[in-house]
Image (cartoon, rainbow over all chains, first blue to last red; front, side, top):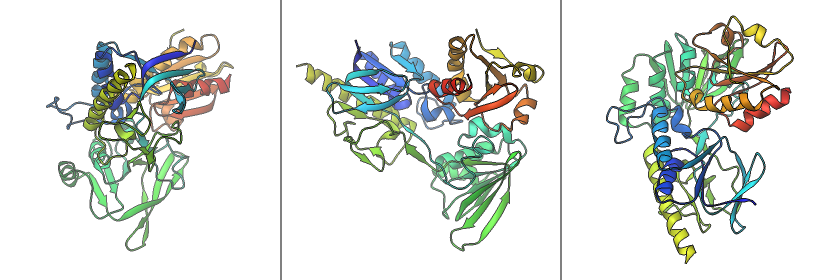
Length: 310
Length: 105
């Protein structure tokens, strides 16, 4: 017989793990499906200073481990390495189609599939990923000891990781398409005060060049003057926001620019289906609101299940 | 079989055979590497007799990753007959790693 659950949580980042923590404490018959390992994007964040309760800060990896351990303590069943290729929200019960074959049906679903790093979409980027093009400073920073590199972006992630990368690289060029950074003030100040960071304003990457050993340089364009220039370096970290992990979602769920629309209780347009975390259509994408939304979504799921039972 | 730990000195002989060898290049400072560690362990058991699943600490063994131009981890490369057949970078799912080995079988 096909597997059926009261609640399925799709995705194991902070939103999914928090939903799972609440669901396991509520004793729901629940499983979390995670295509990789629990943690999500937080896992690749070198240091987190803005998650309350940790006054000294902690690494993204440690926070993931703590969140996972906390959910497991209450018995959350986490299935890692399980990829879902399709979600049928028009059938009753709802159905999830697994990449490895088979399906799981559920009464209620929390979609917390998150987002992944956006790409520049310039020549050289795809071919050179892993050979000098990186989307994860904590993973790849130490390969660039005493070398010159670039970070592309101007938001919190880009500026914070540029500062982190000065621990390894001899020079970090922070290349931003505007004339001001979007990152929060304390992060900006850290970057401005760091002698290892050279900010290149109003500039976009047109091409990533390579030689036999991987990335060798960038072709840049100043968006105001139109002037082109080249920069010789061996690594480029692309940290320009995220794109939603929505490939498995059906057309019937309401999306805005690929992100799921919900109400304040995290309910989507489909009854019994909630969304939480970075997959939601929202302005702020922080660990703290991702986790908070996971809790709200689980409460909405509980409410839906109890009304349904009557 | 459990995961074999390779070093710069035994790497060449380990990948020279006709049996596919999956090598997980990792380091202790890399969160995503730690995260996929258990998946790699599982695959070692599942492919026992069909493929060798191995890992290499890039901090302790700089020569081999340098030779293959590895500048990102985790990087997983499948070798057969001494040559790199296919590779993937990042903390990808188990199915994707398994597909990499399957293609080389």
